[in-house]
Length: 185
Image 1 (cartoon, one colour):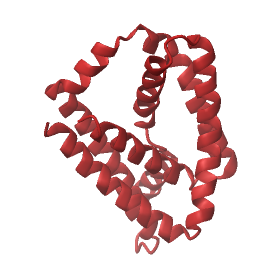
Image 2 (cartoon, rainbow, N blue to C red):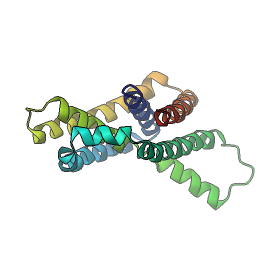
Image 3 (spheres, helix red, strand yellow):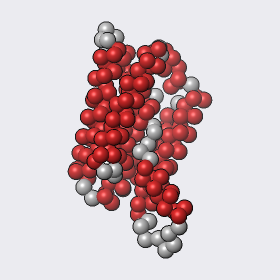
Image 4 (cartoon, helix red, strand yellow):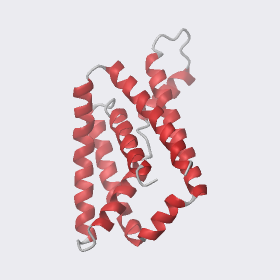
C-alpha cells in the first residue's frame, strides 16, 4: 500500500496534465492558478491533520472503497472525453450532445485536489522545522509552474492530438486498475 498511493497520485497528475493540455494556453495557466490557490487554502486544514490520522485514512478499507469509487468515476469521465473527441463524425448533432461535449471539454479533473492535499501533507511531515506558511507558498508556486509548464511540455512532446488522447485513455485505464489494487489491501 505504501507504493500504490504515490503511483496512483503520479498517474492522476499525468492524467490531469494531459487533459489540461487540451485547453488554450490561458485556460491552462488559469487552471494552474486555481490549483495554486487551492494549495494555499487547504494549508490550515492540512496542518491540523496528524500523520497517524492520514495513515488511518489510507488503512481504512471503507474509506479507500469510497475513494476508489470517486477515482473510477473521474477516470470514466476522462475516458468518455477521449471517445467524444474521436466521435467528430456524428450523423445527428443535438443540443444535448453539444452540451455534453462542452462539459467534457471544460472538466479538468477534480482528483488533482486530493493529490495536492496528499503532497502537501507529505511535505509538511517531511520538513517539520520549516514554517508552514513558507512551505505552502513554495508548494503553491511550484504547483503553478509545474502545471503550466508540464501541460505545455506534454503537449509539445506528444504533439499530435490523437496521440495525446490515446495516452490519456491508457493512463485512465491504469488509474482504474490501480484504484482496484488500492482497495484490495
